[in-house]
Image 1 (cartoon, rainbow, N blue to C red):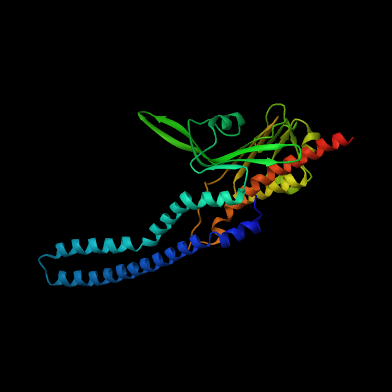
Image 2: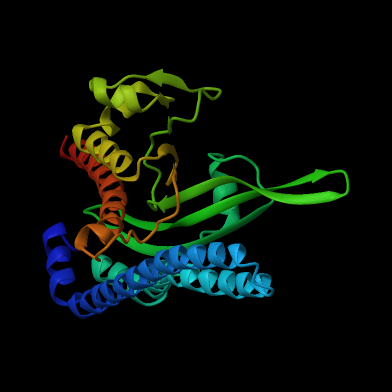
Length: 314
């Protein structure tokens, strides 16, 4: 995976053509929209004066003039939002063409990316992290490998929307009950540390507090065995989880059972943030989230490998 500096350099060099095209389009659209805003205001004032004058003169066809005037004013007013239509067009193009390229440039190798793909429903149900649902949708499916000294983790994640079918009398509606990110990791080996984070206490699990006050304020941890939990929650793992929560701004839940790790983050689906210009900060959250996910997995792998290797040395 690229470093932040490498990704920034990629954006500066490889993405510069698209960035310039987007920014030229946005600037031109803003100019056109401003022209129509001025025109609509000017026409509105002049039209008001004309209508008042016609009313005083008892003009016979004043209603016809009013209809045509309102139609013209409506057209001018609609065109004054031209820049908003262009922004939506740029967002759509980014989603369909540029986002896959940017994701691929970050991950570099050993990955598969499907923009219209999503994680399987059964994997979400197996995690028991999220409420029961009737329907689901999703996008931005990524499958990648994270290789360590002992483990090779197979990571699968995507954005998902879970829905519940609600019946009220004769009407049937679909309501969103979860929107966010979902990750499942198969470490290939039982890492021997059953842990729940922010899930609420389950049978057989005990509350665990780390040495970090900041971590304890943000995450409620439960485990079966405190000794293995102490080995897992080193400074690297805790910092990675705190950083990812800060990056996404959503509520994070995590569960580890045998060889599987499940993680979900309740947050809005990724949106290409466009104001007046397309800059690096518009897309930085793509990098921050992908790198944050990988860092958590890699830090957990490092803790496991360090403990396993130290056992062999003894």
